[in-house]
Image (cartoon, helix red, strand yellow):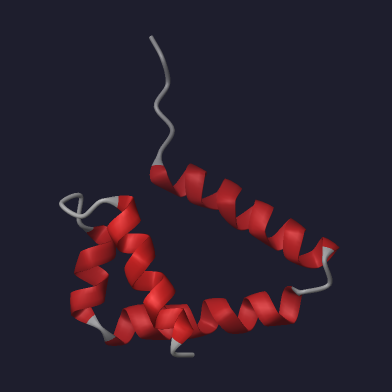
Length: 73
């Protein structure tokens, strides 16, 4: 029987990889700033929160929306 990986475990791995890369490239402050902005945008916008949480939208659609948001920042 295979063990399923929970979302929090996957999120932790991506977070660690992001942190490690940012640190290696001396971009920790810039990445922290971007993530702080992203967190605020998601918290403040219920519609965006639904979009990125919904299985109805493809990951490509979700990524396109996020790219548009960061173009404006």
